[in-house]
Image (cartoon, rainbow, N blue to C red; front, side):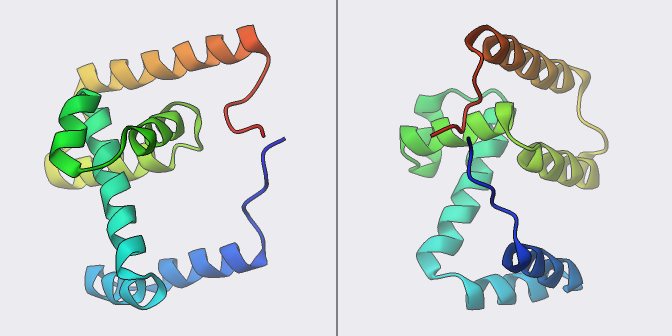
Length: 130
C-alpha cells in the first residue's frame, strides 16, 4: 500500500503556502524552506509536467530541462495516476495566461487517464505500491 503523505505537518505547510499573498511571498518562503537544489528540482519537475502535458517527447524534455528520464517518468506517472496536482496547477496557470485549455489537450489528458485506469484494472494494482 502506498505511504500516506498527509499529516499534521504537511497540512500546516499547505496552510502556510495558502496564507501567502503573492508570487514574491511564495518565492521568498520557498527560498527559506528549500535548499537551492530542492527549489530548482521543484521548478524542473513542474516544467517537465508542462512539457509532457504539451506532448513533448522525452528526448526533447531531457534536452530542454536537463531532467533525467527517471524524473520524467515519475512526473508522467503523477500526471496519469496522481491526485491531479500537476494537472490542476497547469490548468490554472494556462487559464490565467491563455484562457481555457484547448480541446485537443483536454482530449489527450482524458485519454491518458482512461488508458491508465484500464491498465490499473487489468493488473489489479496501483502505481505507487511498494
